[in-house]
Structures are given as structure tokens and as C-alpha cells.
Length: 327
Image 1 (tube, rainbow, N blue to C red):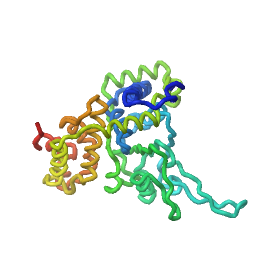
Image 2 (cartoon, rainbow, N blue to C red; image 1 turned 60 degrees about the vertical axis):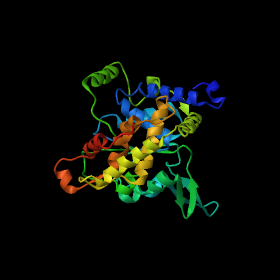
Image 3 (spheres, rainbow, N blue to C red; image 1 turned 90 degrees about the horizontal axis):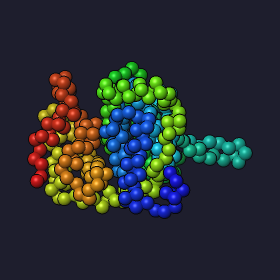
Image 4 (spheres, one colour; image 1 turned 135 degrees about the horizontal axis):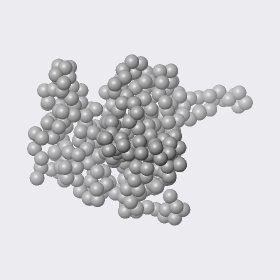
């Protein structure tokens, strides 16, 4: 980012160009996963948090590190382990023998972009330490609230196949994530390109050598969020969002459907997607494109449905076909 880029307040057009450059910059380190990159950008626009789920070795952590390096924002990483304590994340009071007073030492949560790596490896007590931070954008210690920086986004990763020594996230915390993004194994062509890069000397531990540089910052995000807030949503589209979320609650395969928070999250994501694609209004197609990623982690299936192989994605795909779409 040049000095000239920071000497003026970015316009909405500047922000759109910067976010386009951000996606291209991440591509210097991460091959494929274009959809995951798009949803990370949408989360930044919506002030939302993201849960990345995938088997080991599919570049979940690399993706977040590349995003952090391409943003002119503070970032921190916490490796969640079974012995991690809440104070290790939020911070704690430390006794100063010189002043004979307690002072607050800030934890890694006081940043703009927090990577919570393998979040399901830490006990619920530590997982819940993030709840207030994610919802209220603050940390309370000894009854005193301390605001977090703006923007503040949590990107958490977890492994879906290894259950030993893990603690599944409770529904209340899952609901705080705007998106749950599945990171799948790459297609053959993408995997070939990954190996080509490594054969040419690419080192995922040295992203600076790959040419990554900051191309967007807090001012660009602020301008983008202001523009997203101006995106028009017709009453018919609002009704469509409501009908989709209500349909999840009446599906015979679902024990608990999407809450009203899920509906507001779907609205926010659809508006951000519309703006990112150059439109000042939301269409039903915008809602359809983001619906599965917004809602799938908010559905709790009935045990008998899970035994029959029903998935949240399958339920949502059926509902997107059956719920009437406004003209």
C-alpha cells in the first residue's frame, strides 16, 4: 500500500478495488479455495466471524495468514490446546510488586484479526471466553469492560474427522459465527498447481518471499461497510429470507432451525455479496448463494435423520428449491 493510498479517505469505489486486490493478493499464497476467500471478505464487510472446517493439510491456517498479511491490520494467532486458560486469550490482572497494584495485561484477543487455530481442542471454559468478545466486541475482567479494536473478526479452524481430545462447540457459540466454510481437498488441477509452486521454491512459512503485501486497511473496510449499509433490500426479498428461515424450523428432519439471528445474518451476507458484485440492491439469487454457508451450522438435526444420512446442507438445498422465490 503506497503512502498516497493512506493520505485520503477511501471512497466506496476505492474500497471495492482494494477488496478485489485483496482477493488477488491471497491468491499468491493459496491456490483454489476462491469461495472460501470470498466468504472471508464478506465476513470483513459484515463484522462477522468465520468457522473454517476441513481435514488437516488443506491450507486453512495458510489462508488466514495470507489474509492477515494482505490486510494493513493487527493480527494475532492463538493455538487452542487442552491446557489453554481463558486468561491466556482475554488477558488477566497481573500484580506489579513495584507499584503494589494489579495491572491488566491484554491478551491476544485485543487485535483486529484473531486466528483461533483448532478451536475445538480447548475445553468449553476457554471456548466461552471468546463468546463475549465475539458478540459484544469487549472483554470484561473484574467487572470492568474493555472494548476491543474495530474492526474485530475471529476466524477459527477445526478438524471435523479427529474427535479424540476435542470439545465440540456448543450451539450458542456456533450461532455467533456468521459463516461456516468447508475447506475441501483441491481438484486435481489445483493440486498440480500447488506442487508446481512448491517445486519452484514457494515456502508457506515465508509469505513475504511470495510477494504478499498489504493492499487494504481499516479505512477501506469502513468505506465498504458504509456502502453496504446503503444497499437496498425490497420487502419481497426480506419476506423470502424470513420464509427460508421459518422453513428450517418446520422441516421434519430438523430439531432446531435457524433463529432470528440467523435471519439477520443471512440479510447482512446477502447485502454484502450484492455490493461486492457491483449492485446497489439485493436479489433472491444473492440470498440463495450465501444461504447454505450462513445457515448450515445453525441447524440441529434430529438423531433419526442423522442416522438416515441427512445433512444440514441437504435440508437447505431442498428448502431452496421448495420455498417460493419472489419475482
